[in-house]
Amino acid sequence: MKCSRCKEPAVVALPSHHAGFCASCFLDFFTRQVEKGIRRYKLFSHDDSILVAVSGGKDSLALMLELSRLGYKVTGLHIDLGIPGSSEAARAVVERFCERHGLSLLVKETAAEGLAIPLVKQRLKRPVCSVCGKIKRYYFNKIALEQGFTVLATGHNLDDEIARLFSNILRWDRAYLADQGPLLLAEKGFARKVKPLWRLSEFETGNYAFLRGIEYHTAPCPYSKGASFTTHKTFWADLEEAMPGRKLDFYQGFLENGRPAFQQAPETGEESVRPCDLCGYPTSADICGVCRIKEMMRER
Ligand code: SF4
Ligand SMILES: [Zn+2]
Ligand SMILES: [Zn+2]
Image 1: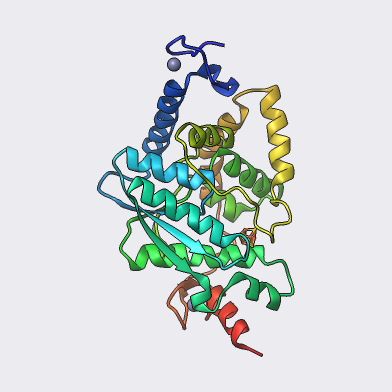
Image 2 (image 1 turned 120 degrees about the vertical axis):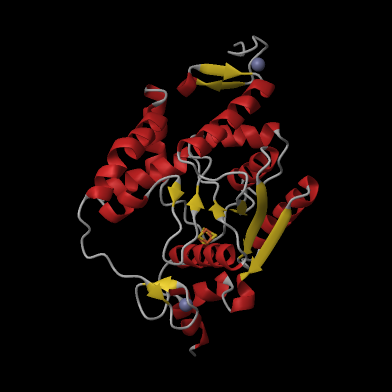
């Protein structure tokens, strides 16, 4: 197969774009997709200071590198969850990455807040992942606002977005369907949130990471029982193989036609958001979810 642009031998085949690229043209393609994704929804500008949530996985590191190459002001934020055999390695990967590329990095250790995930797991009577996710989102948002960042960026790719969208559709979850997308505006104590990789598949971010020589953390978290969206991802991989380009079309169609309809629908029982009595974080109760977890950890 030859590169669709320069006719050199292709190294990456992209049936969904009816194209194949050599390494250099693939990296150009990747950049154009990121730029297109930023432009289409006016995610941010070169005046913004962007906090990038970096887990150590390929998507978040690819995102941070590409944004810095495009001249955006980026700082990484890594949440060290204190999980033995996993967090240390992920953090080391992120630290090496930032050092190698001269990028600034903030690290938040949840253990310092009494929220080491293994201890939280011991206390909970249900799976830890939803609580762990809540804790991570809490610190991403809190640190973005407290330290004056104008945007919080995450490395969610097209496959993540499709899997989430599909799950929301299966439940016809109107609130989530009205909110899902590459841009969530800042409001009521929440930072502006963006997903600049929304046009790129996991396969494409993987190739980008490989071609740019990014070392990333691959070992699964010992507490993950297989990602919850795995079935949906398999379904969509089969559909994409049979009908290349379907995923991006479907997601773009949702953003253009589906989401506005859900946003216009009358809201049912919307909870009012107010600051948490203990920490000031926006919540619909008196005390926010993370402060409740902290209280649970102090009991006994
Ligand atoms: S798999 Fe679960 S516990 Fe592990 S990092 Fe992810 S959300 Fe946290
Ligand atoms: Zn080429
Ligand atoms: Zn709180």
